[in-house]
Image (cartoon, rainbow, N blue to C red):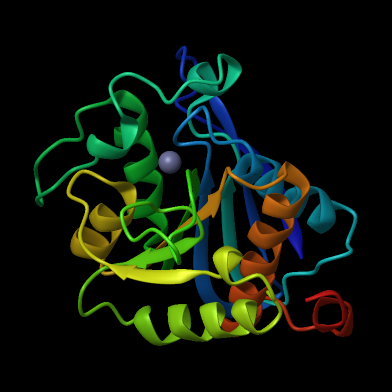
Length: 234
Ligand SMILES: [Zn+2]
């Protein structure tokens, strides 16, 4: 396994680190982004923790390539606000149409370069979707007809089995969100795209834990992680 650190939007005010982790053998490419919205924090902590665990060799990428961008919008994250404009409405909607924000443009360029089979965008939202269908806290989202749907169902079933409190269980939403990184990767790069939304109505440590569980399950299922330590902690 080889881990390298790079800078996205290098030399601009949007500069932010990303990591490329290559397994020793060929396999799928998974791209994980967090911090697209600066006021969502558990997802950023989980992405940073994953990088840390990989660097300490607690987790090990066997096969394929993992790309992690732990804090996409550094400026918004430092100030803990969502960001203006909403970065997740500025990704390209059609082929040959440019992104409407330099960060979305750089992030999409990185995705285009690696053509990930899986594009995972980590977020947080208010409320509990199981008890209030109008909110997005505790949901996984993917696009209509996406090949990600079966895995999304497996992740949600896996998580919900261990969540006794019904309100905290995850639900699934299948919809396009034009201008989002998820829908851009799905439509323009044919990636299996998933958005993860943990609920900010819970303590942060629990939210980080859910984000980590989802990532471990996903990396296992996509064949990147295959070791005893992972299944023991998943
Ligand atoms: Zn968000």
